[in-house]
Length: 112
Image 1 (cartoon, rainbow, N blue to C red):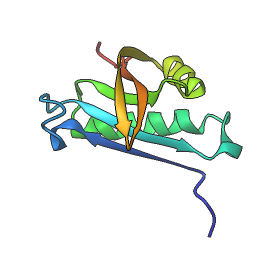
Image 2 (cartoon, rainbow, N blue to C red):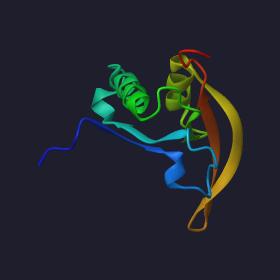
Image 3 (cartoon, rainbow, N blue to C red):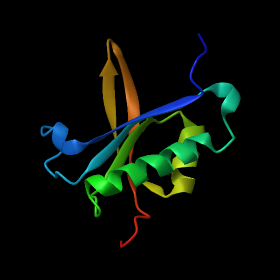
Image 4 (cartoon, rainbow, N blue to C red):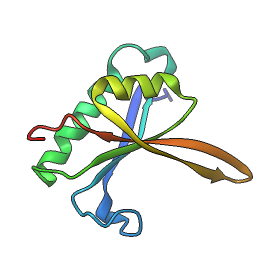
């Protein structure tokens, strides 16, 4: 069985009311591109598809948010080039390990 080239997971925030009270907010939870396919604009295509997918759900979405590990500089650079802006940072625990996480908001929405 071959590993997928890329995948993404996205959701509307109102599925998790404790995290966001705005039903028009969306989150890109995962963007994964297999290492040997990096640099081929596949991640950019996935993000474009996600944003296209959000429009029929809500033509004027609120925030489109994502989080990224602060040392993942390649991903951070890619998100910033696409139009995401860092809005805050916080720590997240996984087991006994604490990770610093940056939060980003998509700022180049049509109509904004």
